Image (cartoon, rainbow, N blue to C red):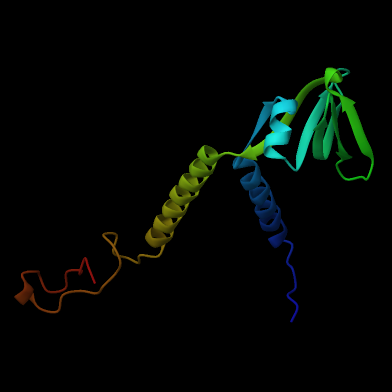
Length: 151
C-alpha cells in the first residue's frame, strides 16, 4: 500500500536527514597523522592527503611503500602515487567516544524534556498531575469532591 505524501511532511523528512547526517559527524573527529607510521599500523580505509600545492586528495586503501604513499582516488579507479616529501599533511576521520557520549546524553535529555512536555500537555484539567477523578466521600481524610492527585 502506498501513502500519499503531504507537502507538510517534506520539512520533517529534511530535518530527519539533516539529523542523521549530523549524528554521523558528531561521533567522529579529524586528526592529522604521520603517514609512514600510521598507515602501516592502522590500515585506514581512506585518508585525505594535502599536497605541497595545497590540493587535497581523498585516497582509499592507502599504502606506504618506501617513500611513496599510494592508493586509489576515492570514488574512481584512478591510481594515486605521491612521494612523502611532497605531502604537506595526511588527515583521517576516526570514532570519538567522547563526542558519542555527549550526543547520547543530549538526545536522552531532549527525549526526557519532550516526554515531560507531552505529559504536561495531556494531563487534563488537574494541573497537579494526571486527572484521576475526585474523592467520593470524606472518609479518606480528603474533602468529598476534591481531586485525587495520584492514580
